[in-house]
Length: 383
Image (cartoon, rainbow, N blue to C red; front, side):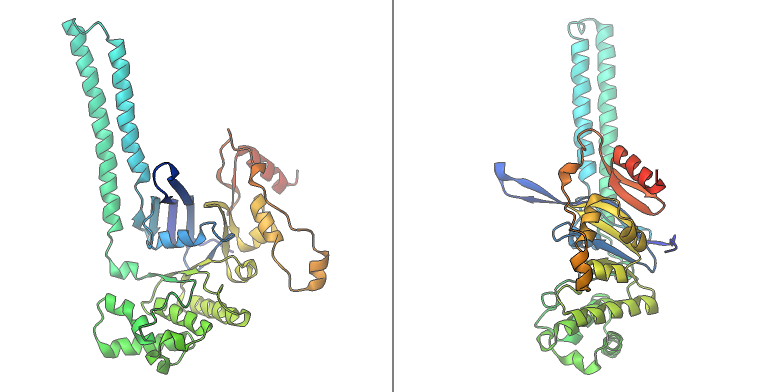
């Protein structure tokens, strides 16, 4: 794939933590832990990994169904989501640092404060510490206010360009609303009040996804699973988005219906130039549908590469394990296929040498420490 420089979505150090329990049993679940990536215009960017790895939470945090704990999300160059955990920690650290310096100064000047000149120097030093602390706190608070203001972005013309197709085609549609009401809801929220315009747009988008205008008066329970998913796609398309987050849109469907939905998304991408972030765990579909693939494990992004590169040359042990589990439709191949490779996180020693997402070759990133990075480089060079 030729890399496109037009970045539609930029995610930087995204974190999504959930707290559970009370008192001593209180736990923090790091559903998404420091994830960064870019999505380029017109591509299909896939997030893969086993159930519970944080794929869906990443998508929901990007579109702000969940407010991020930390990190920043930029859409078409505008910051549309951000968390404040790092800034809050910065304020706490500034206060701790000031208290530490003040205590050290008290020890240094202990017994000397009776001397007026020494006392004056001591008071000046204390004043400098307090001023530095207040300046740091003020800068952190200003950044927090800026982020909160960005999080209150109410620009419909911008935000309607980012839409989501949900995983469950039954639960994501209101059973008390007709198909017309479901699809038209986004138009009405955007201020469209002309009934003729609404009907025209609803009928047009129904035809685009392979349904008929007469379906508009029916309710969700009157459709099959594949048809319901098409309604969900129509709801996302009616506001003319530039970017769609497709959260496992085929996982609840039969194989033949899956192919129809994937082909529909492909057609929409080619016809309208829509950029798609595709969340899935079916690697055979990902291989067919994607341009670039990111692999997630326990809230971390462990590998990111163009599709062909990732499937031909996986470098993170978890990615290798994941690809070894992909079934093949030929039973003769399955019979002779090598055994599935199991991944054990304890194989990594990150006690001293900490890991990060590093570029092992152009466009191919692996979550590794410096020792693992050197080994991967040797493997790639063939030495």
